[in-house]
Amino acid sequence: MLSFQTMPGASFTHLVDAQYAPLFRFALSLTRNASDACDLTQQTFFIWARKGEQLRDGSKAKSWLFTTLYREFLRGRRRAHHLTALEDLPAAEADPAAPEVDVVAGMDAALVVEALQEVDEVYRVPLTLFYLEELSYKEIAETLEVPVGTVMSRLSRGKAQLRAALARKEAGLRGQVVPFVAPREAKEL
Image 1 (spheres, rainbow, N blue to C red):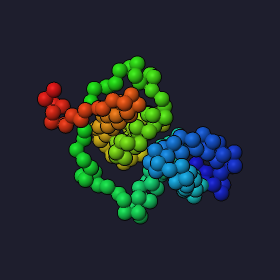
Image 2: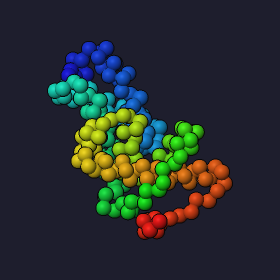
Image 3: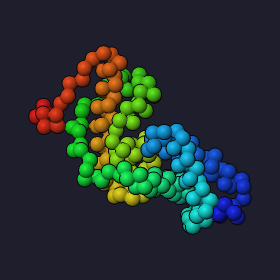
Image 4: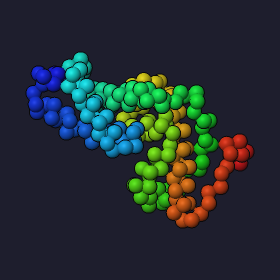
């Protein structure tokens, strides 16, 4: 790959055109703030401009960009002293029943995005990469620098949290109360 200084303008522009929107969506899911997401996305392309030539396989540019964006996000979090260790996360919620297919088909996309923001970050990130950015398990594992098994586990737990958040939101729209089922009680059912 060519650096920003030696890269023909069209190649860099093509990369930005092709990857800006997916990177911005990912950054928005991480930061929950459009301004911060824009800054993070631009920082990622700035780093590409400086270091992109180090990538030997041009077909991995997308993965490189997502990994770089995620690392920059974590670096910013560490600077702000808000990084939560995985060991400090609450125990995973029980996996509630999957919503009916008709309910999912009729859901408002904004409601789903709002529910996604309620999912713990450690699970929200792989969910976003898998469903919104359509990365494979392997690509997600490389981006997050975790084993593939960890990605699969986080996706499973993230889906459970997303289902629970969607159930709460759907019930709230209908004025219903969703009963809380403790993880121990759920296993006994």
